[in-house]
Length: 286
Ligand code: ATP
Ligand code: MG
Image 1 (spheres, rainbow, N blue to C red):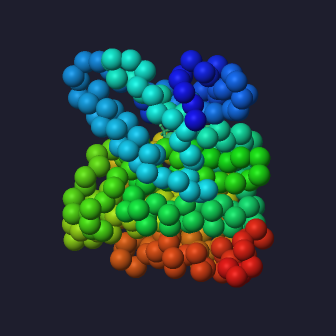
Image 2 (cartoon, protein in one colour):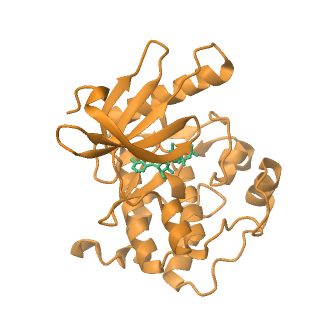
């Protein structure tokens, strides 16, 4: 539907991420708004250049396959020039990410989080059905629009699985929302269900949005890799929020079982009372 990049004009900058900048753009003829994600790939054959190239390739591949109301839509992919820089034209989410939303409001209520949980689970249900593991679920990758629709974005480190089981750490890199078995595959005997990692990340995300800080480290601590890995793989889990309802507490504990074989799956969680409480949920799901 978008013929060329020259049909778009820049309105403003939305944010910078790992290796890319995202702009708000307007389609000149229709005035429709989009988010344009520009990823500059270093032209040299450096290691970081080829890593970035494979990440962008994966992201394009996955965006081209996905078509769901719970996943940010892609309206066009352009190779900018011979150097290989890539531009992704994405559905514009006008309320930003859950990270920016929480920064504005401090914390989010249980009712809002029940709706967030249901929408993200529907997105994960769709992706996992296509054998796609997202691997980077976190507040800044969950985008929101004016109707409070929440959609999954950013497939830079996602993977299409051939089998359900991941046998070794096939993704190098860390993020604070990673599950114990992804930090250290040995915690699960070296073999784990790749999809369970997204559930852990969703649990950490909801917990953080409820309390207003990253919950797995004493607040204020700088999350370096070693401290994080120790806390997540070997530490006792901090207590869930005291003032939270029993359903929310139970939902978090289902997401955050350290043993990935005991963790709930997407379909288990879609039937959880916490999610069924969402006011916008269709009647049959209540
Ligand atoms: P990371 O590199 O760790 O993923 P990030 O998620 O912040 O960090 P990007 O995914 O590149 O990086 O996005 C940068 C920011 O741009 C997002 O946090 C979000 O605020 C904004 N953004 C990205 N995509 C869209 C979109 N489709 N609509 C509106 N804003 C967007
Ligand atoms: Mg991102």
